[in-house]
Length: 302
Image 1: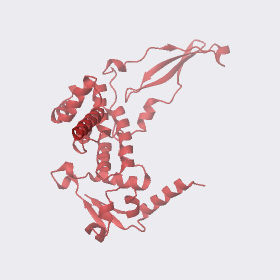
Image 2 (image 1 turned 135 degrees about the vertical axis):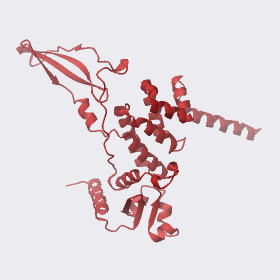
Image 3 (image 1 turned 180 degrees about the vertical axis):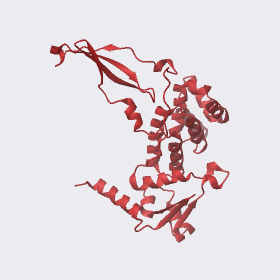
Image 4 (image 1 turned 90 degrees about the horizontal axis):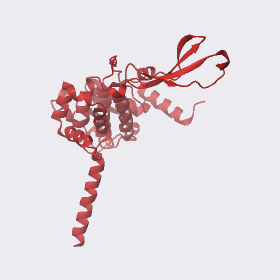
C-alpha cells in the first residue's frame, strides 16, 4: 500500500492529466495548461496575485505569459518549453528535459588531469586465491564525460579477462539528459515565478549536466542564459558556469565561449576573480554589505 506522500503525488498527477476541477489557465506560446489555483499558489508566490479575484486574470481565470518568439525582448519573456516543465513540476515535483546527445570524448584527453590513472596492484587474498586467481585494478575513463570508474583485470591460469567491479560511469552518464540550456531556462522560470523548490532542482540538474557535457557547444548558450535572465544576486547556476570554465580552461579557446565571455562583463570579471584565487563573489558582496552597514551605524552614532 502506498504511503501518504505517494498517494498525494498520484492524486495530483491524475488531477492534472484529467483536467478535472481545474480553475485556472496558463498559456505560453503554443501551450495551454489547465491548472488548479491551490496547487500552483502553494508552490509559487508569484501566482497569488493573478489568481486573486480582485485582478482581471483571476476574474477571467487565465493568464497569458508572453513567449520569447512573440517579442524581441527575450529577457522579459518566457520559453514555452520551460513553462511546460515548470507546470510539470507543480504536479510531479520533477521535470523531464529533452535529452541532449552527448559528444564523445576524444581518444586523447584534452587536459593532462584527464589522463588514465596508473594501474594499482590489489592482490588481496580472497576465496579465489586457492585457484591461483589474482586481480589488478585500474581506473578507466568514461568515453563520454571523462570521469573515472573502477575496472578490474583478473588472470586465471595465465588467461586474462576483464570485469567491471563498479557501476560504469558511462552507464551513469546515459541516465543524465545533459541539457544545460533547458535546465538554465527552467531555473530562470523558477526564479521569475518564485518557485524555490524548482529553483533548487534545476540548479542540481544544471550542475550535473555541466559536469558531463561541458564540451558541447550548447554550454556557451547556457552560460549566456545564466547571466542574462536572472538577477545578479542569484548565484546558483552562475557559480557553476564560472567553476566549469575555470576547471576546463581549454573552453576559452572556443569561439562560442570566447564571444560569450567578452560580451558579458560580469562573467569576465568573475572568471578573473577566480583566476586570482579570490573569494567567491557572493562572499565578497556579503562582506561589502556588512562594511556598509557598519559605516552607516557609526555615522548614526556620531
